[in-house]
Amino acid sequence: AGIMQLMPQTGANFGLDRVTIFDPEKNIEAGAQYIKSLNLSFRKIADKDERIKFILASYNSGPAHIFDAMALAAKYGKNPHIWFDNVDQFLLKKNEPEFYNDPVVKFGRFRGRVTCAYVINTMETYNKYLNKN
Image 1 (cartoon, helix red, strand yellow):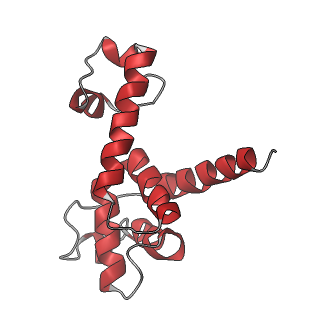
Image 2 (spheres, helix red, strand yellow):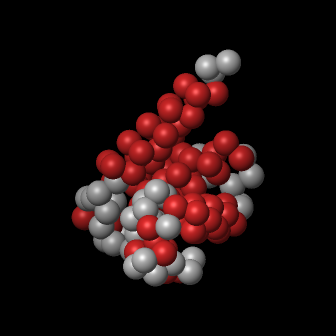
């Protein structure tokens, strides 16, 4: 809800209620705090550009499913700190019983198509604006 499209529970975690979640200034502040917390959650990803992809994915889906996809990537020999062609592929596989029932998966089934598309679209939009100069 609001300008940062925060889920009500996420907004509540950052001090918003049913009314303040629609206050643009408070909503943006809560969204910025959420992004800051996601940055801390993924601080082990040393490459800043890669970390941003994980933050974007988590902003869209919540971090739990991203952590699951990272665990699957590591288990199956992919780099758990690289998004494209590594973790994103396992986020997509979390819709398949073989993967969402895997013991390393803690948060169950997830349809990752929207989240994977969100990362791609957001990065493409960012790069368009970056290259407008």
